[in-house]
Each structure stands twice: as C-alpha cells, then as structure tokens.
Length: 332
Image (cartoon, rainbow, N blue to C red; front, side):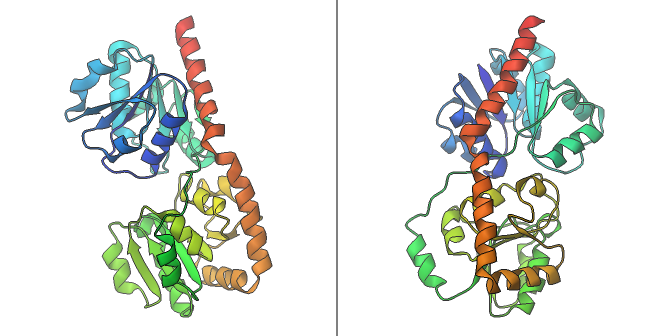
C-alpha cells in the first residue's frame, strides 16, 4: 500500500495536486490528513485517516505502508520518522523555491529520501544545491480539469463591455508581484484589473490601488473568471512552477508573466509575453489589446502545450518512480 501524507491546514495548490494524483493512481492507497483538512472532500480513490497533533503519535498507523509519499514539510518529517522506525522508503514532493533549511534534521530528511520529486527544473536545481539528495526526479504539476459554473452568466453581465486583465494568486506582494499590477493599472485607466485571491497584503494593496482595480477575494469558480478575462497577468517574483498558469493556458488566454523559476518550464516567447517591470506590463497589455492576431497566436500555442500536463499523462510517471523504489527495496 502507498501512503500519502499531507498535513496542510488549507486547500491550495499542493493539496489540489495531492488530490489529482491520488485520484489518478491505480495502486492501493491511503491518505493521512490533518484533522478537519478540506482536502478530505477532494479524495475519491483512497482510504482517509485524519490525525491530530502530536502527529508522531500516529506513526504506528504507517507501519503497513510499503512506500510513503510526503506532499509538504510536516508530512516529510513524519515520513522520515517512519523510515527510521520501520525502514519504510519515502518520497518527497518539493513545490517551492524557498531556501531549504540547513539544520541537521531537515538535511537528514532530504538525504534519506528514496527520491525527491521536483515540479520544475528550477526546483530541482535548488534541491541539488542545498541538499545531498541522491535521487531527484522532475515531474511537473498537473492541469486541473475545471469548467464554468452557473455563476458565469452573472459574471459576464457584470463585466460586459470591459477589457479585463485577470490575476489569480495569493495577495502576497513579495511572491506574487501585485504592486507591479497596481502601477500598470494607474497608467491604463480604461482597463479593468481583476485580482482574485486573498492573503496577508490585501489591505496594503487595496490602499494603493486605483479605482480600476477590483479585489474579488478568494473564489473557487476560477474557470468563470478565466472565461471573462481578455488577458491573464501573472507577474510573480518567485514560482516553483506557477500551476495557475496551466489553467490559463488550457483556457486559451493570452498570458503576460515574469520569466522566473519554473514559469519558464511552462511558457516561452512563443506562448506568452514576458514582462519584468510595470512599464513592460503596460506595453505588453497594449500590444495584445491592439493586435488580436498576436494574442490569439500566443493563446493557441499555450493551449496546445497545456495538453502535456494532464494528470493522466503525469500519474504514470509517479507510479514508475514508486515501482523503481519498491523494486530496489525488495532487492535489498
């Protein structure tokens, strides 16, 4: 049995990817979740075990596992302890570009992992630089199948006759670059800038935003917002991959983004426009607005590329990693 661990409190990108993978795999599985985790509502093809702090008290429940896949930091700690106690091999998924801690415990977690799955080349390079991991595999995040909801007609009516530039991201300026959006919006007063998301910098951003910027807060019906957008703007300053870009690509939207981290694994200048400053964002928006053929060409190429990120194509790659580890463990 494969045992997944994801002890996150909320349901964000990593949890969405956990659910997609678990639901796509054909192996016997169970998932350990934090008590009350919203991820529980998205798991369809595995047994679920909810655990509470102190998490280490639940280590005996991992004893029957043949392999553990940890999807976030606390899960990685638990997987490492289970490995020490029961000699169970474990796999880590690394999704972010934050520095990896250099303390002995964190370094031991990475060093003893049977494999670290990095979601982009940028993440893989960081793991290689900052740990002594023996086996790094690159498997990107998967596209989330989404469709418009019943709320779409109301949204279309609300934004009809407007040119909409959409950003979907946590409102965290140091990571997501929303101050650049606000600066660009000030120079394009006839365009509506729509920010979907919540986060620690919400009040700061609202205080500096011009009147043509609308803050929607967190919304689950992102397909509706992608449908009404003319451009998807994603000026992140750091991204392990930027999986929301996959949704914009699949929706056939022209994309303006910053060429950082794993973003360059997803798009290049044939499938998106790159912008590093507010002025460059303004120029890119004006270019796409005035040249519909260019916008269409970029969007079509991005949509074509999104096909390769379907979970049905990526889950077998994860299964192959599992199987190699299980075969090696059996041989020993």
